Image (cartoon, rainbow, N blue to C red; front, side, top):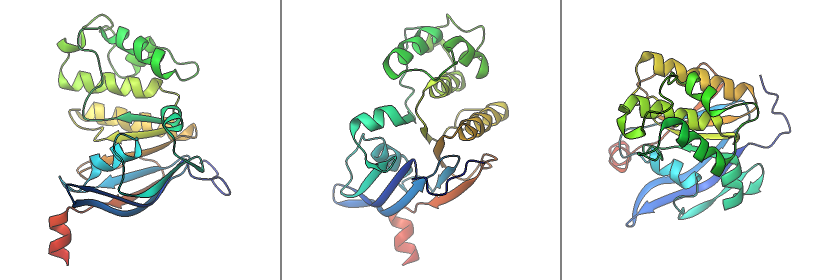
Length: 219
């Protein structure tokens, strides 16, 4: 287990609030992710899980609140160095092969020490698909390739939006093994889920978001 006493969180947010067209999506929220820990963000469709990750990744600007990375106000430079984001969109080039995609992304984002694109393909179960064009892959294979991209990233903070989607039981176990290994190395993860899958077998906490309709029903 990673000792976190007197160590600032990898990622921290205070008073985070986001609205769309003057309609509140979430907030105010306080959250943090320590080294060696996963924060599981649960909630129904429309509760703001994906929006929260996009705000933390710097793709959307919050209405209010502060975000810190490694105890510093989050800058675009810090986000590019510290955050690896797995979204519903694959962020892959459809007319390049799987190995070409990983080499291209490593050139843009850097690469984890002692990890190579070919090995990452084998880890996610895509050995033998090195020259296969992305547009020829199934949805599950594209998700596995996106996971290989995350695995190669040197960023210590993983933002994973529904990482189990489009995966079979073997793929779900793969995600859990990857998260476990990342946390053992001192990384942290924020994982969104509908709650339909078991949490990865790691030290974790849960943050539950509720949609506007659910909040009204509870009022």
